[in-house]
Every structure is written in C-alpha cells, then in structure tokens.
Image 1 (cartoon, helix red, strand yellow):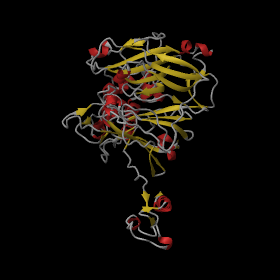
Image 2 (cartoon, rainbow, N blue to C red):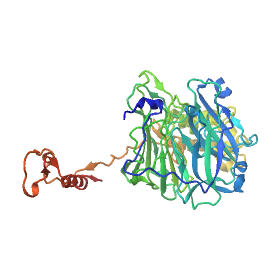
Image 3 (cartoon, rainbow, N blue to C red):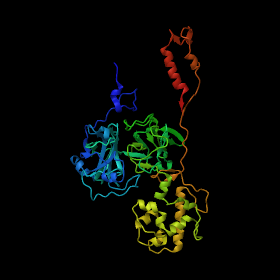
Image 4 (cartoon, helix red, strand yellow):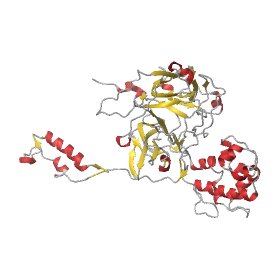
Length: 555
C-alpha cells in the first residue's frame, strides 16, 4: 500500500524511540485524586502593558493564580499541610494546539529565582483565586518554586512509587503561566488549557526536585547568536564540583528535558567525574521543537554524585537567518532559548536553578559598577586604588546598577556619611558596606572607614578575578558565570576528552578477508565459513560476538 506522507503536514517530526524494547507503560494514576489547573477561558492576546513597551504581540504570556485551599478542598488538606504531587497530564484545549508553547506551575510564598530581576518577595495582599495577569512574561516575584512544566509534544509524566514532589507546606498560592504563540495574529481566540495534577496526602518516603540550567532564557542574559550558521552554540553553563559538593547525597535521575525554540539543533548536559568525561546525560541527535519531553538518562548516568562537574550546552542551526543578522535570546518563540532540566530525587535545596550570565553583566549587578577601577591608581594619594576612592566618596555610584536592580534609589552619599546612619539598613548589612563594630553604635572613624573600603575592594576585585592596584598582574575579569553557586565567577574549565571505544586485540583472520571470500570457492575443514554463497548462521554469530567482545572496550 502506498502512503502519502504529505498528509501529516506540519505535524511531522522526530523523537527518540527504543525499537528493541516494548513501548513505555503510561503511569497509572487511577488511585489518586486529581486537580485541574486550567486557564479561565482567557483571550490569547498580549497584555496591554507589554504591548505599550513595544513587546512582540505574537507572543502572549498569561498567568493565573490558584488558591491551594480551594483546589485541594476534596482532599481534606490545606496549604499548611504537605502534599505530594505524583504525576501530571497536559490538558490542551482542542483546536488551540497550534497556539500552545509551554506552561509552568510554581508555588508562591518566598524569595526565588528570576534570571531577569534576581528574585524577590511574594506579596499576596492583592491576590485572589483565579486572578488573571495578562502581562506575565516573567513569573511573579516570589513564585519561582517551579514544580511542574510542560512544552509542545510532551506526554504525561509520573514519578517513581516512592517519590513525590512536595507542595503546600505554608505556600498557599500556585501560579500557572501559559505562553501562547500566535504568529498570524488571529483574533477572538480564547483558551482553557492547563494541567491535570495527581496528588496525595499520604506522603511518599522521598521528595523529588527539579534542576534547571538557565543558559539563555531572558533578554540580556546571554549575547545573541549569529545567523547563517550550520551549527553554533551558546556559552556553556558549568556547575563546578565546589557547587555540587553542597548536595548531601547522590541524586537519582528520573528524566532529562531539553527546551529550545525553532532553531534548536541539540543539547548536552555533560558529566565529568573525578577528571573523567562520562559524556552527556541524554543522547540527542536532533532536537525537535514539536516533540519535547523528559527522557530517561543513559544507563551510566542515572545518578549524579556530589563533586560532579556538569556542563550544559545548546546548539543551534541558524542557516535560515542571514549571516549579517542575529537571533536574540528571550522567552518569545521567535527568539531562542537554552533551558535543559532534570527531574531527580531526593530534593536538595542547593540543586534548584543554575544560571549563566555574561560576566560583564553580573559584575555590574552583583559586585561593582566598573571593574576597571580595581586596576587603576587613585588621583588621591591617600587611597591605594581608584576602587577605594570611588567606594569611599560615592557608595551610590559604586553600586549603581546593583542598587537600582533592588529598588534602592539612594541619593549620592559617601561611605563615611552612610555608616553610622539609619539609611538603607538592610542593604548595608547585606552588602557588608560598613564595619559592623562601629556602624552598630553609629560612630565610625575615618580610619575605620578607609580600612573597610580597602578590605571591601580586595574582596570584590578578587571575587571577579581582578587584582587590586598596585598589583596589576590580572586586569580582566573571570570569563564564566554560574550566578547561583557559592563561587559565581571563575575561568571556564576545559573538559576532559570524552571516553571512546578502542581496539583490545586482533581477529585471527582480518575482517576484510572474511567479508571478501569468493562465494564460488570451496573451503574445507574447520575454516569453512561460507556455504552455498552465503555466510552461515555460525559465522554471523561469531562475527557479532567477536566484534563486541574482542574489538571494543569502553574505558
């Protein structure tokens, strides 16, 4: 029978399939209660505030708040209780599949990660059940505890029988973000898609967690990628051994997910252990936007150990874009993104989100406004470096970008005037701006302030990789960043060469001779390998076993 493959149209694609094993069994959630987190028939259109800022109107980001006390009422629990999520099932409204990009479910109630604005505290004073936020490109501050995610082509997902994802525990509000893509700008589209979440109040023994690698997610986090390239990668995000050593125990990997947009080619989360490159956690030969979802890791990497080095890299094909153009990084579908994720257990507080940033951007946002001050002499002979002079004379200018990002609009003020005053008490303590011993009593001498300025500059310049004048042995900042590890900046390591197969011995007869035997010849005795012009079953078995057992060895 003939088959017209054009019938599938734009729904064709590729995904990983194991042809040697039966299809994976879908998780059975029949014994568990479920809650449907669904959009309340929202209009698929970009919010007015975002449109006014000039944002692309073909991408709509809409959030809805859900009260866990209302959603879990049938389970006889409240948000104060601990609840275990055991599985998810997407509920995409029929007919709206073409507009769907992704959805996230996150708990709100504390400080959390946001690569665009650094997190924040959740304010529930104006929140109510099923409140819709039409301008929601960035998940609200304090709602970065993401525990469920789904993207185009992904299926339902279940957890092992002894594992659950914890929610509740004092966090009352859940926010669901849906990203819609409407390139034709169709009007009058309304949607009630969402997620069916299976949960239980009968707690399982182990908590699960999600680990995310935000290599390039939001605008400004990563440089644009060039067009006209058959294969081009983003910068690699490294999780250094010092960072993973914070894990209290080994992590068991349930699934590894990859997320990019239309130019995505493939992604790798490579593991290096004790100097040995164990390769990528998931072998992906070709990323397909239309078939996303979590995949079990390769057998050798079903467990991560404290002290492992992880390296997340995304590759793209940009040949559809001219070589004199670039593709911006961002959440919109027509920009690009690199966001691998791992679902694992047991949950670790220090294995949530890891994030790349350009070194120059992080320096301004976390350390010092101008790192060249570290390497410059001061015009005032009473200071050893320009860094000390700048901090002493104008704290506001020294930390300009950092203070603005945290909502502090302080007037220009010197360190002497700031220390001992009641101004900006929280930021003073957080940034260690003043000597504690004198700031507490409001009496800091000029010598104490100058000594503290020197110590601060030594610390700050060292953290970004620059020596402090008059030492000019290093004047350039570190070239790699992981913003959510104890050491945020460092020089990118060189990974060990990946393991390869190598020959351990030789065949008793060259393989080329075995395969080139004249089928019309007659061989006698035990060397007869060809009968009637075709290899015997014995030969086939012999060759397969010999090649596997003798020739190949994985170091």
